[in-house]
Amino acid sequence: MEKQPRLLCSVLSVQLRPYEVILNCAILAWKETQTTKKHTGRGIYGAVKAGLPVGFLYTGSHCVPMCEIISVQEKDDEPPSENTGKWQKVPQSPVDSCQHAFTVSYVERTRQHCWQCSEVTFHCPELALCLLWVQTIREQLALLTNRPKQLLVYINPYGGKQRGKQIYDHKVAPIFSQASISTDVIVTERPNHARDHLKTEADLMKYDGVVCVGGDGMFSEIVHGLVSRTQRDEGVDENSMKDTLVPCKLRIGIIPAGSTDCICYATVGSNDPVTSALHIVVGDSQSMDVCSVHDNDTFLRYSVSLLGYGFYGDVLTDSERKRWLGPARYDISGVKTFLSHRYYEGTVSFLPAEGNSGTPRDKFQCRSGCNICRGPSSDKLVSKDENNLPDAERKDDWTVIRGKFLAINAASMSCACPRSPKGLSPAAHLADGTADLILVRKCSRLDFLRHLLRHTNKDDQFDHSFVEVYRVRQFHFTPRYQDCDSEVDLRESGVGSKRFLSQICREHRACGCIQAQSNWNCDGEILPHSAIQVRVHCQLITLFARGIEEQSVFEDPYALCAI
Image 1 (spheres, rainbow, N blue to C red):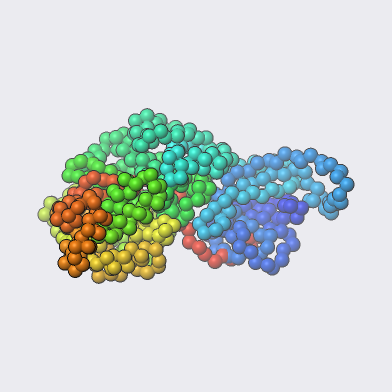
Image 2 (cartoon, one colour):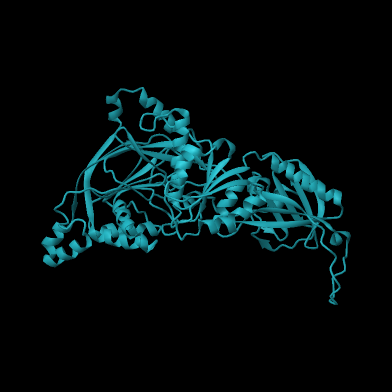
């Protein structure tokens, strides 16, 4: 990478210590003129964004990418200190007695994948030099055209622990204000308030992005409203699976304030509101796939994370009857559904992904700057080619599987969360135009428990004979009927087991005699349809995010990118 020409270079004071400060169009770096050889890990990320290999710093060396500077402000002159009768330090050099100063606010990485807003104040010997630094930094920030200036914010005051408005007012709004971002804030008053407002009333031309403060359900509302509005404006029929949907122009920001915050965790690496706010401020962009779900020629919903039939559908259906328990309802319903051990018979047909999509069992996880997601949108090429092929030839490319399944899951992303750090499909990609289809066939309770427990550790959760996983671009599911293992249990355990399982499964009193179907869990919302058709739309939306950053070992950035 070419060395960037210096814009400014001065000796300024930081906390009464002289520093050599350098600014170019890529980085702001400052280094204490007298340093020790003690290594430190602070401020080590700057040279990465300047395109340089970086690592441990010497004490007193700092480097910040220009794109991660939040703001610069001229600091008011401090009033002379009063004579308190205590000993005061006598300035030893002109640098120590500087009265003119400016403060730079920037992104600093703290614990794993979390960011915070830090500040450094530089004292200048002359007012003209101070103003020159402030003006030059602001001119460089103005060149960052990817940063939002006007945002539409929706706050869900009821999601999670009902702290959405408090989180925004205390943690997010001050950061937006510091970055000179104007906001129009709407506090939602009912379910689908944000979706309906985006679809019909919102003047989207005046905004650079839409931000939701809430959980995964709130994010789903924003996606539905924004995608539907885009298709309507472009004249695309959402009910037709053959039509290629038009990507949304506005980026979406997520401020996590829900129960699980799966979307935020899988795209940023944490569910910290400040980290997400800073990703919005610096104008990061991360494309994401979206699945459209149809019932024949009727559009049902969009999905961005998980479509689950069987186990996860039953857990969600049962938990909705226990909303008064709060987040604990998922644990209780999960145990109940596991003990019921219902399986469902049906037919799954899918169009396998081809090309540079990898496999669900490879070790290449989707990270910031993922080569697979940055490649050409093979989904769009496939879609165009399919429309020109005869029906018989298209059907030959499909795979059909029939059987009895405990769970059928389609993951458009890893679905990682604090409880499941690797997620349902650790190698799933955010923007490659595919989903990972996971089929869990009928097995014993013990085997199914082993499979579920692997979601919480580092073992391969697909390494079971009853688990199959495929990377697909489309899939269909047609149910046949529902059954339960209780018939086998009754023959083995007698009447006592029958009474016990009947109490667990009150909705199916004869647990195994009634033919029934499960519901689909669509991103945490119940989809009361069993037979569905799903298509993955590549990079349909864009988030204010950059993907999960790799944790690396760095070299000295100041020596490499400044001196």
